[in-house]
Image 1 (cartoon, rainbow, N blue to C red):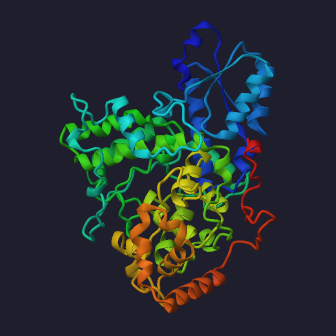
Image 2: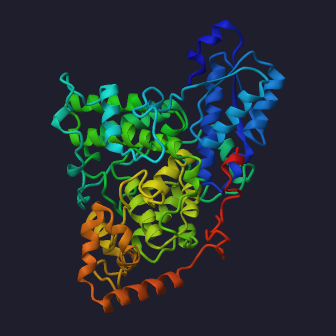
Image 3: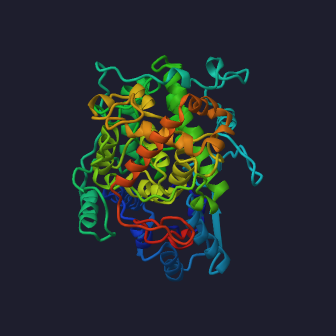
Length: 517
């Protein structure tokens, strides 16, 4: 919410507070670029408000609650106005402040999200499944995005996913996203983060070049519209060891911080189609990500919390592979992607889903520690986006509440959609043997181990039917090789299952969401 637009400003003195909670900043060893981005963006916002004559202040505190409580006692406001928190734990802080009654607390909609303006499912029923497609169509209709005067979708179809599954040809070279030279304020934040003033972290500080102001984010978005949106759709699901960002906007972190408005972005993309400057498949694919999936993920987070943090439908208890931390994975695809993530805190959504999450589900890794890894390493990470995306979509740990099937695959999908396999020592076509790709061995092992549960899912019928072609000897060979691979997998730390059979996080200082802020 822009403080300068608030009508209460005319009724009396307005004070805008930015609380920097050390508990929130230190709860995981976050990627240093993430720390720099969040702190710099917040401080630039305070700087901009001050330039407009607003009394804006940074409050450094151990926790959000402590910082707000101290500020309320000092300022003695007649009203505390706060946007509804996206994250569950911060929402608990808001509720406690309101219940304490030190002064009136008004919680207003969070303008970072369209679902705060229109909720397609305002009264969900516990235990009922709500899928994304109807949600997405309702959002399109509500905001008039790619909708014709007769109420029908532009082009006659709601979904152009079938157009958006091309592999990147060698001759196509995607342009780079816009980079920004850190200014004095950002350099000061970089120094603080490098010195560990906001906790320990992973990754590097130097080289930081992300947008930290609304103007920078808008500049980067305009370059995306001009240079990458036209090819975004066809290569949305492609993966490449030559190009880390392909045609993606790489602006999810800025959106999550409120530097860009999702509706403005969606309308700008639609305008490019109306002007004949971008194909419908690219524009629809981008809008689907912005006002479909992103909004649906927040909705699912609120629908499923606080139970979402503990889901483990497939019973994974394994510790994380060490190479998720050092980038030394034996498979070329995961080696390339993890090194990018360690370096810049980013990989695009298909690499997150079909490489990292796919492997972790097939390998039986504990869902909680996988979620903590994503929270730790990605610059766009927040509980509200990571938990439903990773636990729900990526690992299917919620049993199908978020997504209707587990997104598992063998090496065939990776080989089809990327050039990773060409530079790998493993054979993407072999199921067993010393050169067999671990994705193949683990995929077939997962099908064998969970055959009954998978057979009950109609969307996985063809995959399970493939088991009928395996002899008893082939099944035993797959099971034995998968067991050997997992036994030899270098793990991060020596972590034993607790009394409940779950492996505790080796990164989190606490797993109790009520204590995080």
